[in-house]
Length: 152
Image 1 (cartoon, rainbow, N blue to C red):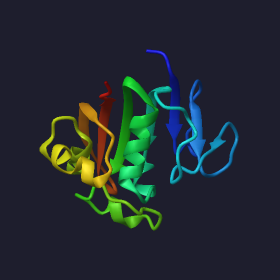
Image 2 (spheres, rainbow, N blue to C red; image 1 turned 135 degrees about the vertical axis):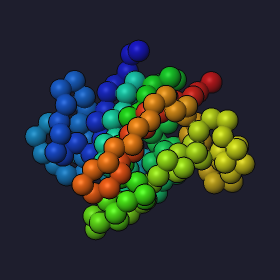
Image 3 (spheres, rainbow, N blue to C red; image 1 turned 60 degrees about the vertical axis):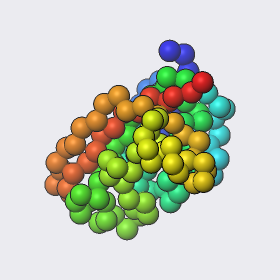
């Protein structure tokens, strides 16, 4: 699948062959404020990695809509986030949004929550879950979830 490969929140892990984006400048970092509209064109990314970044972004709907917008049809996003099932979600003073497995239901194609609330909440994002796993860490559970962009 053709398209960009984007690594969000890349300050402490830069990957070769990716656009490594972070709000903090650094070597091989593209400075991006993900709280604003993302700088990449619609349907331009085949893969987005978002490891330990979503919980630092204040607006879940904006984040998920932008993630979906930049992905090509069938493009994937790999997300890792501490869940509200443990203290890790709350311990970092920079965490400002809180996630668990059920948070993604509102963006999942065919899910009753998405079907009922998407229009009134302003949700355009539509994904299919292709893989998920929970890992226990010293800070509590972390969810890894891989989403595929569902687009016409």
